[in-house]
Image (cartoon, rainbow, N blue to C red):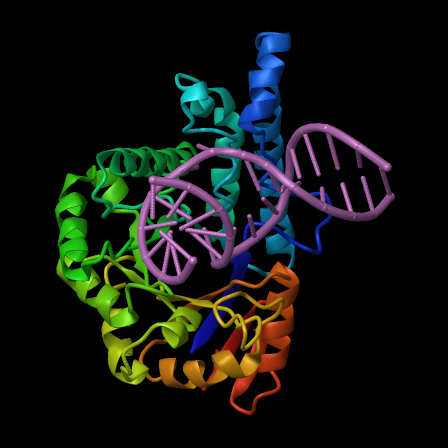
Length: 322
DNA sequence: ACCTGTCAAGTCTGG
DNA sequence: CCAGACTTGACAGGT
């Protein structure tokens, strides 16, 4: 099995390269009051810098043979806030988006976004659903501006339980049908650490033909005693036809006190046993490392795993396993 | 240069 | 009904 590793949004090795500069509503308003247009100017500069740094990060990745990467969701500050309604950031920043997209295509990179937990397809509140739709549209627009095809994905969770998981699940299915096709074809679903187990998400993914990202830390936090080996072939099968290898997320618990929190690094034992299992069912796998030490944690994990008997390190961010 | 409370957004729990 | 947790990097205002 070939395994490729990636990390989330920012590097701890590449300095001064934040892709997540933001502008607060308060400072936007203060600036606009003092000098109309200066708030938008600050937002524009932050967005330009975030895109610039995202490209720098991709180059850092390619230089280190990393091909899997998740963009920051904060590339465009206040993008969907009413204060900036009507600002056409795509048109204005199009050359930068295109440059990023070109680089991704030239180097065969696998990129994604993970819209954060305010994006809830199954909320019973109309305003939350509308805001979620707007946020998904926003993320989708960014990938379209980069001129990337449907292999560039949006990873989200199913949403809340709302006191009745079955009803909430049904509402997800209903609202799924209301999503524009261009958004639907990019979404992949991930099991979460509190409500929707891997088995829940798999069932949904099978019904609606959605690829599933398995988070093995979340699986450890939230399961009903299922045997992962039994779920795995079906989870991997959800990727058939997507033109992408299956993907998983890995992280380690911060402490026994706070088992859900992410540790600075990943304990290789947390991944190794999974890989021996996964190798029986998939020839290729992409692993997104979610650790506070970001790319450093990813590199260390790959090196740690290379010490196991069945593992061959094939690059700084990739492994081969028999 | 460094420190600390605060920040758009939702849901859930517990008081 | 409301405060706090969740989770998290960066802002903003202070020293």
